[in-house]
Length: 151
Length: 205
Image (tube, rainbow over all chains, first blue to last red):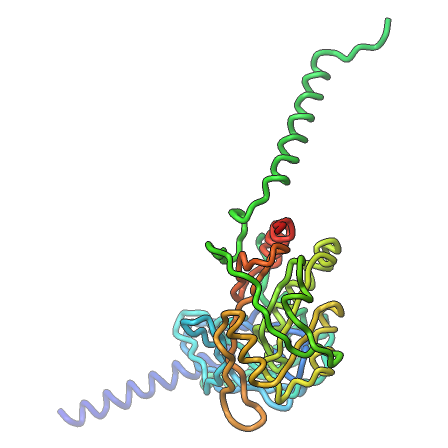
């Protein structure tokens, strides 16, 4: 009986591994944009999902145009105070979309080089399962990082 | 026989005239009820505080902005996510409507006096609009200004040179009558700003 349990565990582990392999490289990143820097820092936003709907975890970001890149969450206190906190990773749950947008989540590009609107920068997203995924982000006016204005 | 307009033409003329009256009526009826920001039901008076502008001169907020539509915002230069978005939105509305730009004072107060020098504040604001006013002061002066404006005092978070600043996320709008009629939390769109500035500029004291 015990042996059967061990085999089951091994099979389950193998299934997890296979599932992990299938997710490899299957990250779909859209709307990658960075607000033109107005100071030493700039914010990068994008939307990510896995093509097969498997879960993944964003564990790091790097780009040649910044000295350092950190995943940040914007905090909203009850009294209306807003702030930023670094977060070590971001979960992309199975079948869901991970959205980084102003006032929510962003990648803070620190010590960023001067960037002009319309320029495109290369960014490497590091995922736990999918590994490194290269994306191109467009430099836009900070006013346009919010996305389309329907009004 | 002199030319006389036919009956259908007269009806058309009457319709056009009626339309013009309706449009004019709407323009004249802009009221604070149409504001899309967070409306302050009992508007409060413009605060009185004195800080230092980017030329190094004293700037008495209440008297310098008297009789003008004024947008007041507390932020800091290392802020990549909130501050530039607010300021860039306002600047783009100004670009499209120079008359509103001429009638409006934008006052940005840096709440990060250790890092943001007057010269750096000027450079920062010039990226949005060279007419935006930038202010700084001592910690005590900034605390007094924030208290007077009714916003929670900014707090430094983290250690080392990469600390961040928690600060009020909204822009405060004072009409030309010197009263705070609405506030604008983060996420306000340009179309909302354009709508509201046109209403606010018409509130006479």
